[in-house]
Image 1 (tube, rainbow over the protein chains, first blue to last red):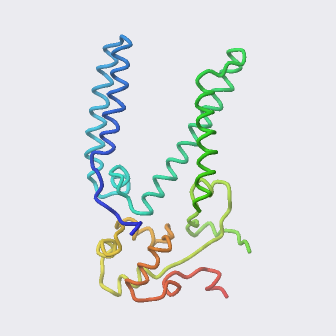
Image 2: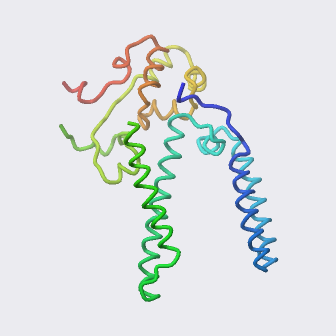
Image 3: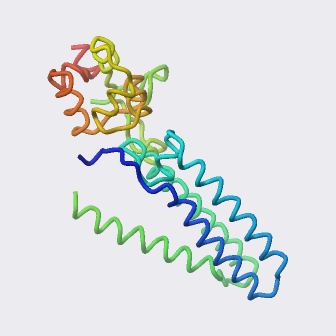
Length: 132
Length: 95
């Protein structure tokens, strides 16, 4: 059944933190800031440990972290993701406006974020509406 | 037909992002708690039978979450009742 609540992968969120944090720490190390790189390694190792422990709990957040929620928990995750996307999009738009005002119309990296966000939304809408 | 939502009752289950922009009026109460208690079952036992979490059963019973049609059908099948005998809309009840 589509709403089944599985056991999931307890290490899923921890793995994302280890890979993402490790990549960030490696880039910082290559960039020359070895102290900050070590701090990042320690921070993400601790965060991954906490995530692994938290994912083992019988709670809504635990199930979402295991990528194993039932229909309600998946909807919680989807709503939270949508709100996070809205916040990121809004931040990118504000950043682009501020950047344009400061840098003679150059919106810099914010432009890429706005473009990717807008394109993803448009394509997703087109694909998803064909499915339902 | 649109009704203004009674703020003392749980909001309907439209997606959160839509709920920020649109006023929804759907109100559905249910008899899950009553039927579960009559069957001498715990929330955890019912959750296990239906393949959902205990928290989801709790949310359904408290009217915070309106289950999907497949889950509502599974609940009805579990209690050997019709879906509309378990999930009752306010409009239906008022008429």
